[in-house]
Image (cartoon, rainbow, N blue to C red; front, top):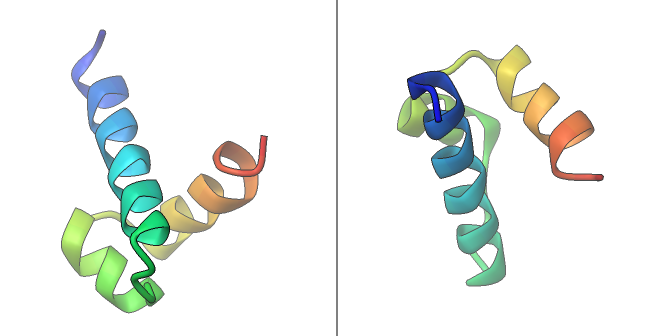
Length: 51
């Protein structure tokens, strides 16, 4: 697995875990936590987590 794919998998897994635990997530906090752009987060939610 490439470094990029591994980071994506870890980020998505962590986001799902946090949501499952009932945490309220804000885009601003996620950008800071994962050091990604808001565009990347939108893609994560709209394309990767909904399928």
